[in-house]
Image 1 (cartoon, rainbow, N blue to C red):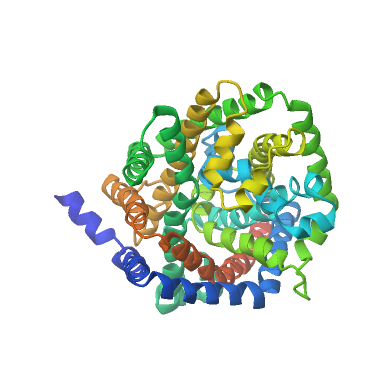
Image 2: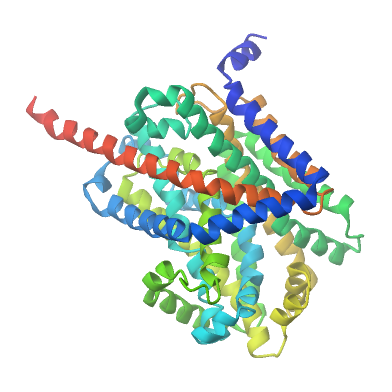
Length: 511
């Protein structure tokens, strides 16, 4: 009874109720007025993507360069706590960063994104499918994508472990600039935007890979692929990450490790069993070189004459999407990085994150590319003619030996990825729901369970409205516009606070 009363008193009801109400209202509007709401959101999303291209491009490249400065300047030597505070091995730490961030989307896109680029006329003008359909996935999911997570993780890690602040909120990261204003109206606005982006972003990620999961399960076990099966799969995912969250950080760490092993097994299956290992590795090696050679050009090309709008449709879209998604896990990454230096955190985050991401796209993506370029399977044409991404992916897997076992391995790995991502997000938003929460204290199990349930209810509800997933995703993309300004505020606040900290440290021995 006393614990329940304390939980009620400690809960930030504004941070919980208001964003939930907004998302619920949006969902209702999308279901009642699907066509009108879709048109309106498309218009706003299109305007921001077109008129705001340079804003997203500058922010993306600028944040990446900022992380490099954090690592290799005097700030890189700052330790987040004490050296003996390191709780996880490098492998545990790295797997938790990777699996908590990219979700099952990475498996889905690894298998089919090359085919989407293959249908772009702009790719042919650059030099063809072989060279660029394998390069662009590495670019759009590469250093700039990870920089959004890493820069915020550094700022939040410094805030929690060095400054010892007990408010685990976006607004708290702006305190060095905004001062006590973060305790009032402006702090509420910042937190509202952040949580709204988090809820809408997490609700829509299921729209990408769930159809592949349901189609795969239906194929292997002979079930009818429909709404009932999709809901059952979502409930299974929810059950898995709810149980994990119930056990706290120890459970999350173990699940991340198991997820990584499954991921390795899936990669090994595609690389070895498919008989295309030489092509896969050579294409991947070439794509890495091509991306590094053209990185600045790819990061700054905005098609001013709008001859093809490729950067608006892809690069700007991705930077906006990462800006929204980066709300989800930086607090989690910052918390598990206790005891490490900022340099170690930045470079380690890039190494583990990019290693997992690049390996996934190189092996899974280039196997499908091999089927099209060498064996004549027209996967990109199938998608261009209206074929579903899920069916295209299953066609690719069907070319592998023991394909049914391969599909089962893919399903299990995707469920594990979903679970590891959402258990970390659940821990983050549960901490966000407190007025104050010491760094060494985990959120109450009731709070964790509440958010675990909420995160699965939205996708289930949205299954019954055809266009609502796209609409909610558009809300998330639109939310990226103000999120960009908040990220800048947090970064500037970090440098101001870190400079003050280092100045005091330099003067300390002279006292």
